[in-house]
Length: 139
Image 1 (cartoon, one colour):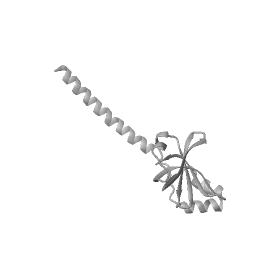
Image 2: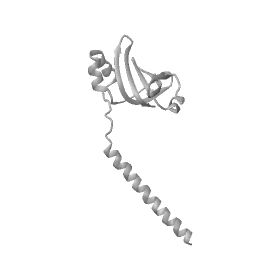
Image 3: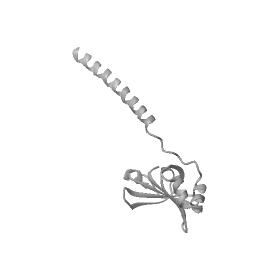
Image 4: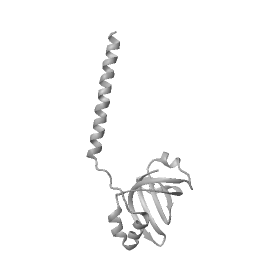
């Protein structure tokens, strides 16, 4: 009987602890600022880079980009902190999505349509066309 009472008491403590952890997680989300999401279209971003690459990077760098496209290439990267790069074609734009997690990359295939998100590292519009480089990408 004593064991049952002890287990009951531990269950109540555990449940109240979970509720407290849930409240802490909710409080943390309200404190942590949400990353600003880009609302411009990819062609508008590319036009901004064509007009003035420095200005475009000041507008879009470190902001969240969400989109869809077709995987063109999956490769190891030489960029420090981002061991993998997934190239995604979306219209005339090449998105170079930097990925840290090998498991994420292992689940992707060339020619696969995918949704992606990541933090803009840079925007370029040069003789190769428009390219957007992302970090911390997910699919």
